[in-house]
Amino acid sequence: MNRIKLHDKYFVPFISNEKINAAIDAVAVKINNDFKNREDIPLLLCVLNGSIMFTGELMQRLDFLCELTSIRLSSYQGTQSTGVTKQIMGLSTDITGRCVIIIEDIVDTGHTIVDLQKLLIEAGAGEVKVCTMLLKPSVYRQNVKLDYVAMEIDNRFIVGYGLDYDQLGRNFKDIYVLE
Ligand code: IMP
Ligand code: MG
Image 1 (tube, rainbow, N blue to C red):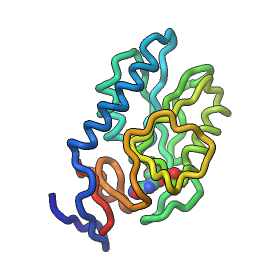
Image 2: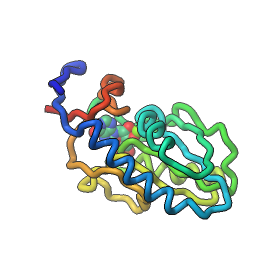
Image 3: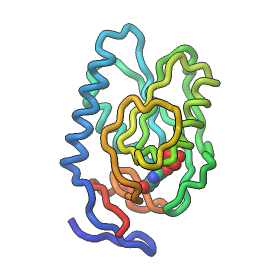
């Protein structure tokens, strides 16, 4: 793995694809265990665009019946959260009374997850669970319970595995950190 340049910034290897996969394996075991005896069919909610790779990998490891839908939100500009969540593409599925499992790439300040939980409850969700690939615990100061967290990292800006710096870097299979 080498240093990569995206726009004006350099990024260096941080979390290997092998480590990401191992963390996804572990979080999938927990979800499978919690959902194995349920009668209802949960709805996985992929938060585009960042969560696309994580959702794809995670789904393959889930062994209960589930459905998939997506929503597209945006709150980041460059390497900073704006604190304002924009809805670029809304919900296209009726979620009334259903258990929705939010699948996020990363929870940072938590503004996105707070707004998303509110939106889902207002849309009639019966239950909302949160699964995130990454968490920056030193920055997260919200009350929304994060039910499943695959990996925790320090407060650093990362790219790869779906995560971008101004739209670049999403396609890398490893995660890189700002140099
Ligand atoms: P929050 O609202 O501050 O929790 O930010 C959540 C969203 O910002 C995530 O879903 C990501 O899309 C983006 N984000 C947060 N941290 C990073 C990062 O380190 N790299 C790239 N995107 C990030
Ligand atoms: Mg995101």
